[in-house]
Length: 138
Image 1 (cartoon, one colour):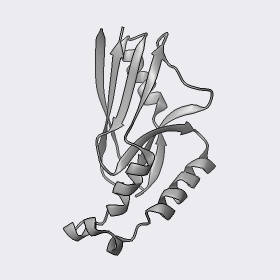
Image 2: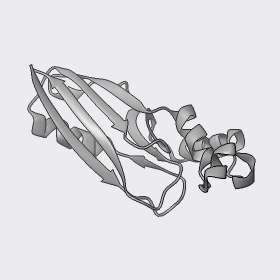
Image 3: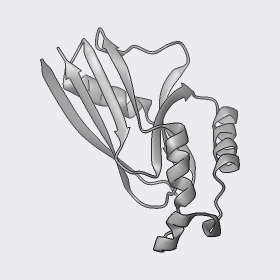
Image 4: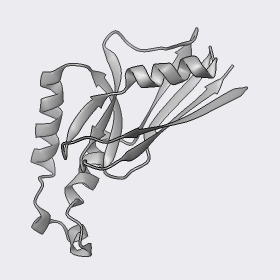
């Protein structure tokens, strides 16, 4: 069995954003040479997310509005912010949207459903954050 590890660094100018990273993951899959296996993608930061869904801008706005309703940016509202930070909401948003995805690799391609794509969700942006891509298989 082979493995391939890569890291992406992302910085968003906005505090909250959704970025399609499918092409970057596919490029790493091509570099790996793996034809059958699994691809893990995860955010290595506790205020950002990786998830799979549809690449539709209205849906992305809905995700951002939904997470804001459930965990609003309100620095005075979170005990975590007593540590001097103001990102308690971002930790909760990451929990809602998830840490990682695993996608099957079949015949050298990510084995998606018809509309599935991989996204990076940023909830405390404006600084560089790393994502891990780990591909294993043959």
